[in-house]
Image (cartoon, rainbow, N blue to C red; front, side, top):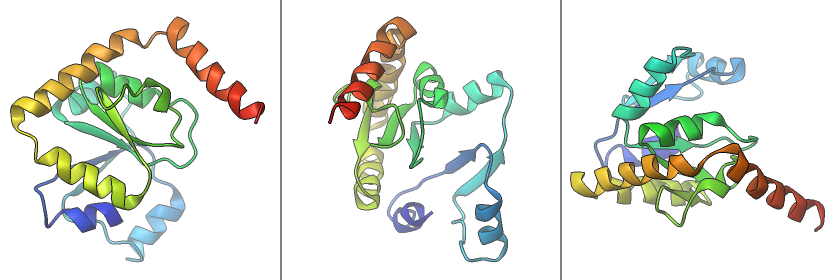
Length: 160
């Protein structure tokens, strides 16, 4: 929410938040401890793959802010639908990001703000190219190729 608040005066942004919201976060929204910017819409749980695909296809990027995540399939669904990925190091899908071709990894809130603002400065043609890159790269995300990459990362961390 901080990032959205920081950038919404700089760019025209619409933020859709899909999925379960924790009770703790909902309490903060209800008590106004956290104020959602006007550009944010909460969808809640979306179980229809057709609706999920439609939402991803209409979006330009998927921002993953999870601080603790395994291998989230929403990133793969987003790539299949043509969403450029913006993820942090802890979200579990950095192995499928290909040198900014289909997404980018951010380090901090400041980085995330800069990435989103810079992305928004792209022409529609360039954004469509990045979306096509995402869609194209999704063809390589099959378990037989992805699992060895994940295994390598896990083993390197175990052996540190």
